[in-house]
Each structure stands twice: as C-alpha cells, then as structure tokens.
Length: 391
Image (cartoon, rainbow, N blue to C red):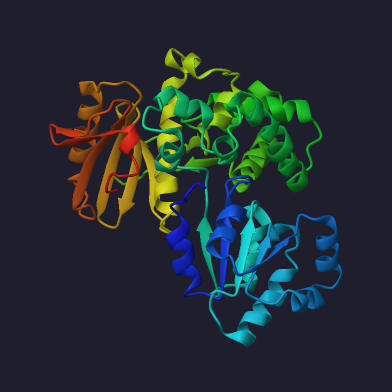
C-alpha cells in the first residue's frame, strides 16, 4: 500500500466540513485514498452506467438510498446530485458526511461553488510526489528514471511498464475526457497539438505559434489547452509582475502535471534516453513545478506561483509568493550548479529591494545533484529532497 501525503489533510478537512471534494486527474489515486481514509463509508461509483442512470433519473430517491457517510466517486458524471447534497447537509448539519471525487474541474468546480459554497472543502490529489515514489522505488532511483516513469500510482502498485501503460492512459483517459468536454472534429490535429505542447513544456505558451504549427485556429488551441488544464493534464504559470520599470514578458509558462506523460508524448521509450535528451532540462523544470504544486496541494494549502523574465535580461523559473515574502527558484537538471543561476537570483533580489511590499527574498536552486548546501546566500536543494525542504 502506498501511503499518501494527502491523508492527514483529507481527514482534517472532513472533521470540519460536511463535504470534502477531492479533485485530480484520473488514476491519481483518489478512490483508493478516499476508501482507505474512510473505510466505514458507503462507496458509490457513478462511472457505473446503471448506478449513474438511477442517479440521473431520480436524484432525490437515489440520495435517500445512499445515506451518509458515503463516498460518491466521479461526481462530475452526475452533477445534478450536488443540489440535493446541499439540502441534505443543511438538514443534517454534521461534518464528514460526504466525500466527493472528480477528475474534471471545468464543470464540476462551477457546480460545487454554486451548490456547496461554504459547505465543502476542496482538495487536489495529483500523482505521487517524489517522497511517495521513493517509498516504493527505493533510494537508488535515478533522476532520469523518475522523470521517465512519472508518478501515477498504478505504475508502482502493479509494477507496470511506463512505456506501455502511459500511451494507453493518454488514449483511454486523457483523449476520452477531451472528447466528453469539447467537440473535437479533427482528432489527428488534436494529437499533433498535444505532442507540440509536450515539446513546449516549461516554455512560455504562445498560442498563435502552437496553432500555426498544428494547422488549426488559435481559438481551437485555446479551447484544447483549457480542457487539458481542466482534466489536470497540464497547468499554466502566469508571469510575475511588479511595476519595476522593466519590460517584462507577459506570457504564461506551460507545465505538464506528469513528466511521464511528457516523455510518452515525445516518444521517449527508455529512461536512459533522458541522460542526453535535448529537452531533459525542460522536462525537469516542469517536474519541479509539479512537485511544488503537489507539496502544497497535499497539505491543503494554496500558494501563488509565477515566473519572471525581463526582456531583454535574466529570468527566474518560479516565484512563490507568501504575503510579503518571496521564494525565487531557479531549476537546473545538472549535477552541478553554475554561477549563472546564482547571479539571476541575486539580480532578482536587487530588483525586489525597490518594492516596499516585499520584505524578504529567499533564493533557491533545485538541481539534479545529491547534496543540500548554501552557496553565496543561495539554498541549493537536490531533487530527491524537494518534499523535505521547508517551502
């Protein structure tokens, strides 16, 4: 059994809210976690056609038959239940009654915010973080292997080969969800766009360039990216902006949630290929961005994440904002860190000194080496210790 870092946050939220909504990509372990955390709760799978038909045809009677505590899995398949759950929790006035899981946040988030506002806690369960992966893979896991396999739990619990399971996942789950959420007339163009996006992971997302390369309209690409974001395939990191009299890049950066998915889309069929792969640094940067998102999501916390680049000038890969404190993070896949990364962080700190709303800049480099230490006032954090670092 894989022990998930999210478990304590899930239990804490259920003790203070009548409903907990657990969102995340398909196969990220939502069902397993919910059933392990709440073994006495009734489990109802709304993916089952017969069960779903009953819920859709008579939601009030269906809810009366499935009294809490209950887990409703894949609630986006029957959003009509949300209004009836609202009525039920208002009548019962007890915490920990309903656990909802969902893998599509485009429509579900709207329904939850309308029907269950103030009644539900929202948590996000993503694929395994590096600490969870190491717990089942061992301490000898290499960086290339970690990037290649990604973090979907079934790869580890069932000892599956990433090079065969991940392409099936992309076709079975990712592409199916897109078809359900948006009408795709040219599926060849969509698959081309998906591969083009994978090749641009950790880069600034210029929709017009992707559209030109894929041979589709900008609006089409925009719609597909929104759906891929809604199904937790990727996420966009907006640009950091302050009025520092600098010409700043205003495009968001694109990151995929799972590095294994990126490798599969790019045709990487073996971990050893990544040792000299041209996009290794880009894949690693997105892996670090996703690890940071997992770190805070597993604790039920939210943090503002952005990126910074002056044009022309230097850039900082990730900026984390905590009120008046900022973490400026550079990401390097090599086993050693050169002076350029250090200089960029110091340059950003100098700019930040002119901003009275910023009281502290903590400078960090996440890199592909093994030793954690400080150099020239900068914290160097090895990739294996990302989840142990005090972010």
